Length: 218
Length: 247
Image (cartoon, rainbow over all chains, first blue to last red; front, side):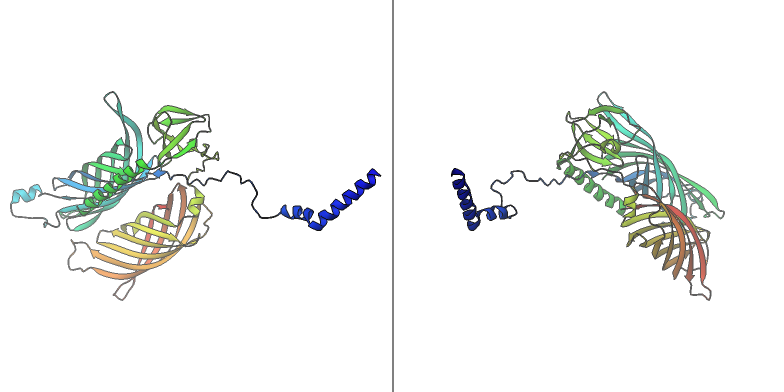
C-alpha cells in the first residue's frame, strides 16, 4: 500500500516537474550564458614589461694635434660616431679638419706660396673597424675604479688637402676611459697614410694624429 | 665645425636620454640558475666581483652588446652576460624570453646600412648604402660611392635592385641591377680638363654572409657602363667588399 502511494507520488512529482519545465530549465541552464552567481575575483594581469635600454651607439667630439707632412703640426678638431657590434668589435665613422701652416720652404723663400688659403685646409673622413683588445680598470685613490678599453683600429677614407681628394688608410691605437657607463674619454694615436704628388714627385705621406675626445653612449 | 655642433647637440640629447632612463621603471627578473656572475664591466675580460643566487630578484638597468647591467637587491650593480639571463624568470613565473639576435632576425630584416671598399677601374672606391627589403629575396638599395684615383676622383649615386637567390642560406649569392649618375673631377695637377656628370648603369653579382648579431659580410662585382658625351661609352669594372648591419 505504502509503496503504491510512493509510486503515485513520484509519478505526480515527475509529471508536475515535466509540465512546469523544471527539469528542462535545469538542463538549459547548464549551457546558458547568464553570468554565474559568484564572479571569480581573479583578473588576468596584462603586464607590459619595461623596455630594456640598450646603449650600442657612441657619439662624440675629438680635439688634438695632427702632423701634416711638410706642413707643420696643426690643431685638429672632429667628430666620431661608433656602433658596437659585439663586446670586442665596433665600427667607427670619423671626420676631422685642420688648417695647416706654411712649409719651411715657403717661410724661407718669403714670397713663394705652394698653396692657396682654401687648399691649405686639411679635412678627412674615414670608416674604420676597431677591436677592444685589452679591457681593464684604472684605480683612482682607494675607493674608485674606472673601466677602460684599449682598442686597435684601422680603416679607409678620404683626405681633402692641397686641392685634391686623396684615398687614405688610417690605423692606430686608442683608449676609452669610462668614468660613467654612458660617458667615455678617448685618447687616440692614429696614422693617416696617403699618396701625394704636390712637390712634383709622388710620395707616400704619413700624418700622425694625437687626439683627446669625449663620447656618449646611447 | 658645423659637425662638431651637431655632435654637441646630439650629446645633449644623449644626456637627456640617460637622465630619463634613470626615472623609468626597470625590468625585473628572478634568477633560476644556481647563481649568476656579476662582472665589473661589459666584457668577458672584466673580473667577476659578485655572485647573485637563485631566487633573487634582479633589475635590468641597461644593455650593451651581449651584456646586461643588473642591480641586485643588496644594491650592487654589475654586468652579466646574456646567456646567464636566458634561464631567469619573469614576475609571472614564465621564462624571460631573451635570445640573442640570430639568423631569424637577419631573415626578417627590413632596413640595412653598410660600407664597402674596393677597386673601381684602378681607383680606390669607398661606398656606403642604405637598403630596404621588400620580400626575403628582393631589396632596393641607395648607394653613395666615392672613387679616388691617380688622375680623377668620382662621386657616384645609384639606385639598385638586389635579388638574393637563397635567402634562407647563411651565405647566399645575389644578383643586382641599377643605375644613377657619376660626377668625375680630374685631378688639380692635370691641366685643361673639366668636371663632367654622366649617367651610369650597372649589373653585378655578389655574395652576402650573415656573421653575428646585426653583422653581415658582403662582397660584390659590378660592371658599369658610363654614358659619356663622347662617341664611346666607358666601361668600368668594380670589385668591393665590406660589412653591413641590419635593423
